[in-house]
Structures are given as C-alpha cells and as structure tokens.
Image (cartoon, rainbow, N blue to C red):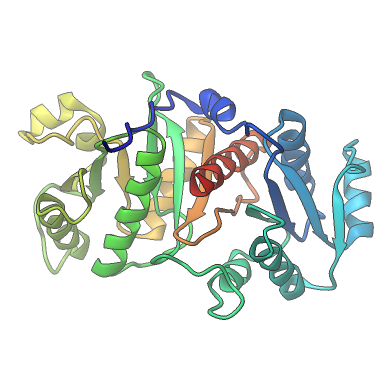
Length: 312
C-alpha cells in the first residue's frame, strides 16, 4: 500500500516543532558568516535545537560581530576562508562530504552562492531548476500558503514556469497538502496576448495541470490576486473553479511582481515568512537583508524540515 500523506503542518509555529530532529540537529553551512542578523538566526536555530551552524568566512570579523550583539558562537565550528568564492565552494563541499545538510547565505551575493550550487562538477546536482519558495500564514485564517518565485528566476519562460510550479507543489506536498491548489497570478482572468504574455503562460499551465503534468494538483489561471484569495471576489467576477478563493500556492509571473508581493506581505502586513531555494539536492536559505531575525529563523526551520524529508 502507498504511504499515507503527511499530516498538514497547520502554521509556522508548528513548523518550528515539526522541524525539530529526532537525533542530532542537522548542520547548516553559513557562507560568509560575519553578519549580525544571520548570526542571530544561527544562534536561535541552535538554541531551539533546529540546526547546528558551521561558520565560514573571516572568523575574526565573525567573532567581532557576534560580540557586538552578545552572541555566543563558541560551540560552533569555524572555517577561515579568504573571499566569497572560497566561502561558497566550502559550503557546498561540506554538503557533498555529508558534513552539512543545508546551506545559508551570509555576506555573499545570492548569484555567487547559487552558481556554486549549480556547478556541474563540484555543486549539488539540481533536479530541475532552482526556484525560491516562501511560506507564510494567510491573514485571518492562519493556514499555510506558498509564494513563488520572488527571488531567483527573473523573467521565466513557459518551461521554467513548469519547473517553478513543480518545485512549489513538491514543497506543498511535504508540508501535508495532498492536493495543492495553484493560482497562476496575472492582472486579469482573460488571456490577453501579446499585451500580457503572462496570461497566455498561465492559461497553458492550467491546461497542462488538467492533463496531469503536476500530478494530483489543481492549477488555474490566469488569475488576479483577489480572485485567488477571496471566494467573494471570485463569485463577483464569475470565476468558478477549485482554486479560486482557496489557493494554496501563488505563482508570480516574474521576479518583480513576486518580490513586490513578498515585501507587501512582510512589510505592510508584518507577516512572518519562511523562504528556501529548492530544486537541488540541498535546501538553500537566502535571506534578504531586510528580513527579520524571526523570518531568518523560520527559513532555517523550513530548510531543516525539507532536508529531513529528503533524507527520509
């Protein structure tokens, strides 16, 4: 008999509990660790039993930043590296050697870190493409929702959007959403090509979903944000499908709209977020400089949870 799907994780606080390992905590390799907010998240993850940091970079600077913030990094392994390239190579090497289960970005550009992950010879063999998935709680109901991709793919074509949806659906299933509902976001529910190319992509992806491209997931679009989230708005606009008003996954048409939506949720609404780059063999945490320490901690929790699921 097939294994029963996991029970849904009801909220981000529950994610912190679900991410707690049964044995020793997974190790997280932090590339260029001399960053106060990243160190706060790393120490918080250690204190919560979520992950054990390995600090990589300028260790004198790391110790100085930690002292300024009153953080005890004495229990953690430190690896001296001279620059960004060496730090990201070391982080990936630790994963390949089995000494780390996840990777976190410190004071390195995201592109530099992801290039090391994607390196054909020395990287972490992507399964498809890399994409960023963010987890947050819907205001009011508290149910978990996903947003993709606000951080990695700039202007994805149709094939990349297929992989972005596939990555997000895989994360949703690990979180207990047996049949996730995917909304392909746009400015309207009608195909308007060539003026709005995203509407055509959304329509094609919805048709692919209906043909089973994404397994047992419901995909609909094009769909404006209000229709994806509000059953009342969907009814008012005459949109009648399983996703309208009940979306689990919001798929932005490009990085600009995805990033604006991400920062609207985190800044205007003050929501806690948890974001991870998925698609390779190693979950990668790439926090924004503006993310709160709690968002960084929750992102580490999500990465630890996914790493544990991968090992299982």
